Length: 468
Ligand code: BG6
Image 1 (tube, protein in one colour):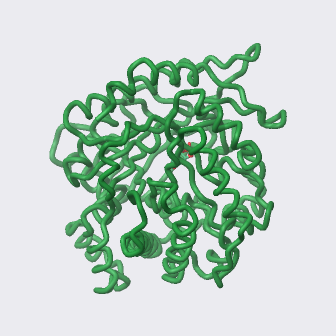
Image 2 (spheres, helix red, strand yellow):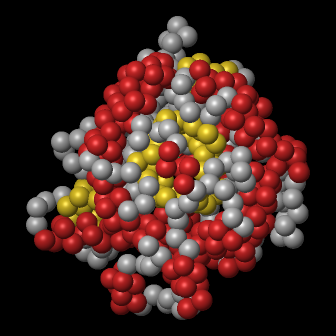
Image 3 (cartoon, helix red, strand yellow):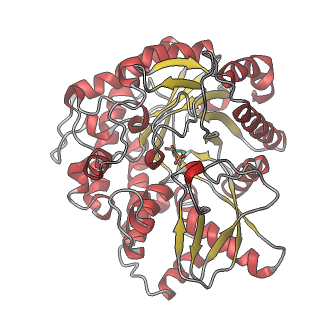
């Protein structure tokens, strides 16, 4: 890691992802992503236009600048940059990101770039996606291209966003493309993604790209629902299942031994984990961890059949979200927490624990790369009073500052999301933005009350308290 990173100011920013905000799904030579294909084929709400960030990014960056934000986390659309299996580079796609990065720098905003936030090119999905090791090689090719183009201008790189969610949802729960439900495929993909991460880190170091390279993990804090050994064991199972395979392999270079043992006992085939790949993972760990924290889970043991219920319908959903994995753990609702309409529990202590746990385990710098509140925001007389979001962010930032005061080397905080955007299977109704996007009328931008609150809070003290 570059030493200058240690003296950088604390980053206060907001985040987006390419598919969720850019729109322009067919413009300037971009090819189809797996999400384009999947949502179109099934007739689901899609991100064809999304927040139209592709055309409005200058206005968005101006708003971030005026909102006192000094960093912007965004991702690169792989199918905009590389258009086929031969690795053909689309210069117009690269030029878009060049303009976006230049605009960040002109506005005094650090670009914090995620290389992969789920929008795999369809041509790679057709050869098996993350089940196929060729996708790992293709990922390194993508990294090489973007580092050659933007290395030096961008100092904060992350390889993947949340390996847990796109593998689990695509290959175990089947609610994301390619809608498979197969534990063997799940663990194969998980391994290949962590291998691709390590191969990319190796490349970053070999090419001496300036700055730092990390990975963004979704971190779910799992707490025993009751104070007993069985619930504690279930919480550890859940941690292994959802978090540790990812964080331990990228930050320490090894998979948890008890998890590996357990998978073998369950009859899963781990022959994909060959010595050479394990060595690459071992030798190429990240400089920092990005942690996305939204809500906690409370767990008990589970002997019932596996069942995953995800609330994508908000207030119209007739059940409650749950996660039951036979023999591993089951989640239960905590009656003492407030939940939003999509069953997300609000618990700022979970953010503190996320930071503390990961820092104590890995001793590398951490950033909160996503934290935010999804809601049905309404505009009334041109104003959006999103007080619940303000309360949520305020509570979580206070938890972050507490962790920092307790010695955690946390270096930045990003609200999810900069502006309203397309929320995967939830559509555009579930709004997270500091800025309202009027999807019905040309995507015009209207800053919400939370935008002004965040702007003033940064000026009034977050920066001071957060500084190293
Ligand atoms: C994170 C993802 O899992 O959570 C984002 O990195 C996502 O892409 C965010 O949008 C909020 O989740 P959701 O499902 O409510 O959009």
